[in-house]
Amino acid sequence: MSEIETNNHPCSEGVAIIIFGVTGDLSRRKLMPALYENALLNHLPQPFHIIGFARRPWDDQKLRAELSDGITNYARTQPVNEQVLNKLLEHTCYVESPFEEPAGYTLLREILSGLGVKNILFYLATPPGAYATIAEKIGQSNFESCRDGWRRIVVEKPFGHDLISAQALDKTLHSVFQEDQIYRMDHYLGKETVQNILAFRFGNGIFEPLWNRNNIDHIQITMAESEGVGTRAGYYDHAGVIRDVFQNHLLQLLSLTAMEAPAVFSPKAVRDEKVKVLNSINVISGDTALKNTFRAQYVSGTINGARVPSYRDEPNVAPDSVTETFMAARLFVNNWRWAGVPFYLRSGKRLPKRKTEIAIQFTQIPLTLFGQRNLAGEAPNMLVLRIQPDEGITLFLGAKVPGGAMRIEPVEMRFSYAEAFGDSHPEAYERLLLDCLQGDATLFNRRDEVGEACHLTQEIIDAWETQGLENQPIYEAGTQGPHGADDFIMRHNRHWRII
Ligand code: BG6
Image (cartoon, rainbow, N blue to C red; front, side, top):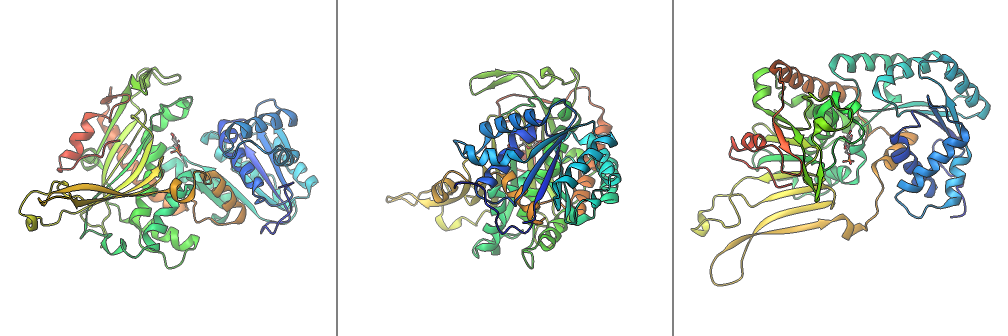
């Protein structure tokens, strides 16, 4: 491709994306590479302006150099096409300003008016503490006086620290933007394999009739990471795994697994169905929350042959921190389809590998037919949606071993994304950025979804706080997680799948 051409994009009269907090990692590692990939495919509207807004004393040149570096290092398609890169960075400028300073927004408005751009996408890539201030300042700065067009805002999770602050943030956002202008980002929803949950369930007739309490014993959703808290302790030590991923990624995976088919594939219909699932989850609080959750913190151990430190020894973690880095929960979706089927959710940092999957364990069949124990296991049928890495789907079956005796052993039927579609597919941010440029909010969280998820989570956090722990239960980095998590699931005669 010789250059980025103007195309038939719905916002073909141009867009400016204003990235607040452009100097941070999110912008360098995710947003810019995603914009670049879209530019490479000629998917960006033209003209496309990128305006960075942050506190650091950078200028336009420095911004371009940093963004170029981010793209060169993190773009999915390598080597980077210099022509596309330069074209993308040509329309870039930097506003140096504290987020609370009105002068910065006045300058921003002048730049936008000068560019004559119609459509504006505000992107909050800052620490969450700055969201409300930025939204307020946008509201006070009269961006409506720029050319007529759409205004949208992307907000990264976490949407508030607790229920009260989430509600306050929501109120501030709504004092400036309408709900259909607010794009709450949960990047899990942009993953191909997560989008495939609905394609798999509703595009194939054979599993849906089994997808209910009559045929399913339980569901296990695992999001394991081998990485520790890295450089993000400032945020993570106040969030813990419950706010960081349980409240959003895990509950989203649960919703997609459990929801009914939407009447049409529209943002409203899909999100209506997801919110119904969240609404149907039995809220657990007090003692019930304590009995149905388990949390722990990692201590030093070995991962891939390398020693890694304890959570409490990570930079910027309080030495007496009781923040959980692992949690497991048992939830019930109390509706016609799912009543009585436990959903086990778990996530942790510093587990042996990075692995996200949804395992659907079907019920045991009556095994008298073969007059012997089924060697394939007590309940051989399990369907595993492999979200990442090694993306695909596995169906476990019992099969007769060739030979005279009736011996049944477990076998696997596997679908692999890489084998079927090749290795390289769009990153979540590529899809999600394009969707908000095109005004499609299907893969973004709606206000009521966030409200339900926050409510559910807050009850658990409140129950945990009553315990007043001085130390969390621990697990050694690189192991399968805390022993207590095994006891937790074995109470109900079930086992975690090996990570
Ligand atoms: C983020 C969390 O939302 O998701 C991180 O804040 C986590 O703590 C990350 O590491 C995992 O994302 P992915 O796409 O690598 O599974």
